[in-house]
Image (cartoon, rainbow, N blue to C red; front, side, top):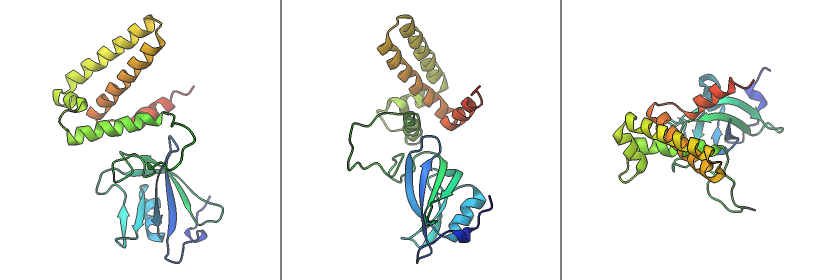
Length: 207
């Protein structure tokens, strides 16, 4: 399909809203505006660029924070006046440090259900601890002690999972697997490996 930017309907200010969505979890991360130039830069670079209405200038998402968005898919709606962009998000999307800008709940019909997105959320917290190293944090303690301590904890938690499984204890297995996953997130962060890299490796094994 050949895309012509002139097919899109920009508003009177030359802008079009762009909804940014996580390509893996489908979580809506943020909404911003693009003009023709920022859209062209996005298509050319493979990372999101927007138009800041407050600063009246182009901005490259992640240029300051390091939390870039790698574009994987892009769509426009039936009226050609808004965009949906699916990305791989590095770190939090929101300037507040939240994974998504849409974290203020107005109405919910039921208690939120945890999903696989929690892996990315925990990883973001872990990488934040690695960067800021706040006192009193167990994650800070692990990074301070170094790789050998982290590996020891991964080994210990793996053994606890085995013991729980041998005991046929459902609750114990769930608890210990959660512990293991957390320490694996710490290990990934220590090695500067993202969960996305693991997801991509798993995708190769869908046979």
